[in-house]
Image (cartoon, rainbow, N blue to C red; front, side):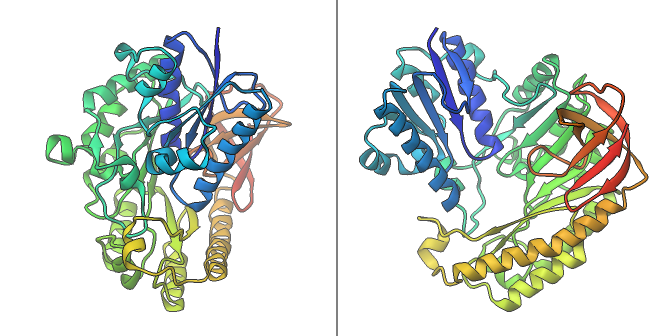
Length: 428
């Protein structure tokens, strides 16, 4: 049996695409593995990311590493797909001609045709999960209709396209049948769900229907947008016990000056009012956000306002990204990248240092309390799990000591005994 190694780069949305391709390749008779270093597979597919400069550099370096392996005789065929080739396909063909074929972000049919196989419509929505068997990412839409100044996502993925609700629920039921207990619901912008397809926002209805799926014990929502936020989903979150009190909502900035330059369609006061409403309607919710520093036009005054905002809002989870100037975006056409790189770095580090203190204080408040965790793995002397306030890869983990046996993929009640910046420690 021929073997294919898929190197999946970038975000969890990209990982879902990799899993869909894996199922198609397996149906076509291939043995498929993911991210195996020095794989013996003779065919390599690189699923690239093209979101920001660092991601593009990682993608190009990964392609070049595989070209070197091909030159050494370790690989026969290299195929490149994903965001980078969607955006820069023609340039890549000229710069790295050793790649056998380049494909767009969703061109699984093209990859199969290159291998002399046909795309199987009967398993169009089936995936080979690469995550641990107890959780899975569930993508509800593609693309984005927002016009944020800095973002190249719409260039690569196009306009927003909601998946039909029945199709999403069917996939959730199938995943639950495979043993999945936690659904990590995501899209570039979940808060626009249904507007294109049903002419009204139907996120709350979708989440409610997912909560009805037998076997699904946790549902987490990722990548909300503050403008036109569908507040009715907060009622579902409060009322349904398996919809976690967790929301990933990317705010990017707070000063009205920057929000206007970023074309976010929201003001500082509207943002603050929304955050207060979320916390009022869903007591105990953990809010994760991402912020951007160094966008063109950001002054020290803007940055200090953002720093004060973080101190005031006390986010449970927070990430910071320095601005990356991307070709063909609104920024590229209308602004000059006028904030020095060292200033971007300093501002990002200052924000994260501020958040570190906030995170430590919030974590220490859990000491002595009993929490429900989902155990992901065993690592050395610890079992490692997550609370309902934490998603894989990006949030804190709970390191559990016990003289009993715990089952990977099961829920357990543990008592928190310690905390640091970004982790909890507990006993079972």
